[in-house]
Length: 330
Image 1 (cartoon, rainbow, N blue to C red):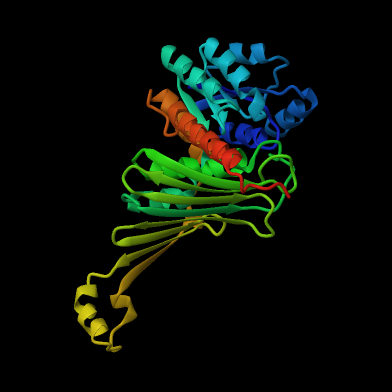
Image 2: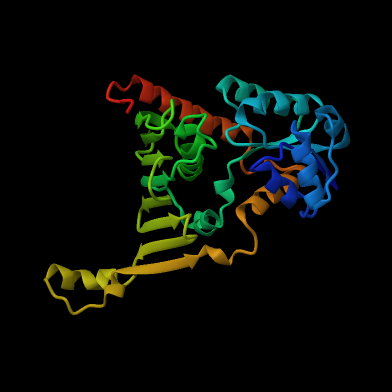
């Protein structure tokens, strides 16, 4: 039985504590937050013990879930690894690339599990579509949201776009060879809208757009690959897969001859998947995978290397934005 503790019970951490308290294979030992009043409030809600110090919590657990502000990820994760504890840390893994690389090396040296909270990997929409994704050559993603002060202390690339960066890197099994990007600061001192074009060694291209100052909320990824088009709508929890119909070869002569006496369904097969039917949500799938990775001594699905790679690309995108003379501050 894995003994787990949660560090930070703010907007995200309170949900982590609730979910871990219900997962089989682990025992929720307690929570710690610098705001002890908040910690006792969450502890009382879910009947979870509260620790007064980080050190006391680390002494009582085998693994920790770190859900504090990104700037504190490195210090807390390093303390946990030094104490011999497995760690789950929210995305992005750290606020600086060198810190992420150090944590990965330390986890490997101590033979400890390190998982990064890129929760979209466990989104039911992605789980329903993943087996159908085969060498996509063009990807287009849009992650748009109305302004929310939470998360606005970092550029939108680290706040929102990094979700899609991680997903795209998991879809395309090839190295990135070129990045072009632009961005604009509107309501904050950092970039609020960003677009990046990622070019891969195998010829694949990904066009990624993120905004936190939009009037509507949209979270979609569209993939084009040989013989298939896949659309994932995270907001509506729906997957649409279009594939060439086996009957297309018979219909083509009619199309070429300008005839219209054919069934449109003979052109493409359309599969609609309602991802609302999953028995669990993404956070439960994600934290279950962490517990299983530790208990069964497996590499986490989103390990430290994956989290570091996504962070590295995010920083490259931000560097390209800074280099682009067309980027204006409104």
